[in-house]
Image 1 (cartoon, helix red, strand yellow):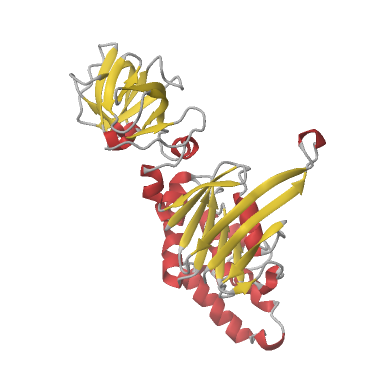
Image 2 (cartoon, one colour):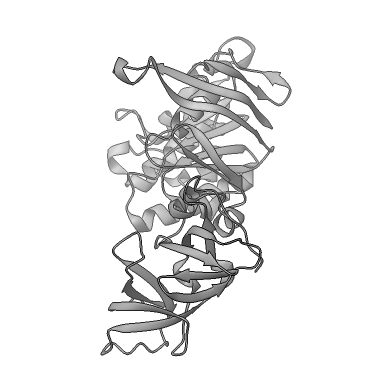
Length: 366
């Protein structure tokens, strides 16, 4: 099911009238979600991603704009008639019902020509349970399940209606780190197996980037960038996107370009063909640093952290925006911890320049 959002806007009354009459939660959102794809809505808390999901589901009504499922205008269609399956951060399982009864519950509300027999409801509940691999737990109550198992019940309950669209609102927030990883892989497997168009809301960029076909990066109700996860990571359109994506965070410096060369402090660290002389904000991914005793870029050495597969070299620099900088290098790379400084070369494709005023990307030839 293709979903098309046209100029979608949602305004809420502002409780603090000093700051305007309305709060704009979603601002002029235009996007077409391809059929059968998993889309990640990503951004910090309060950016409008959950409101966007609620608009698509019908739980909220847009102030302006339209929503289409395929060629059908569903902007004012009630939620129960949209054919959506919803999974929230709070699993909202009925504690007195078994797993089977929880999964069957949405089917029991069907009326008229859609009404199902009890045997058909049980059959569909079992199919949904098998899909999320909880078919051996059908007689248990929610209190007898782990957090991950409860989440699977919630997903099965959403799938049992055979929805046209599956909407997931931060569904992994209540799980521990290992279970989050396992469950997000399960969500991707289920989505591929069913082919249901899925929208996944999260503030966790690792989640969004690992399982999404495309990500939508939002801030303050505005869409900042849409694209395949790796493309957005490699080519951020502005400083916000660059700093929001990536773990550890991208390293940001005050810098300048002079004679098509990038200067951070007094050091010429990189050639930047095509950029005129100007002040810039320079952002360097942690993996963009190469240990090099003759390298052009000198950082103060704070400490070295061994992280198993990689080593994090924690550094400082007077031109850095943040107090701590991190360079990620291979574990077999040797860093002389007796010295106060460490030198690097830079990978040009991991270096991004931005306008200090607009914070928009300034591309240069790599």
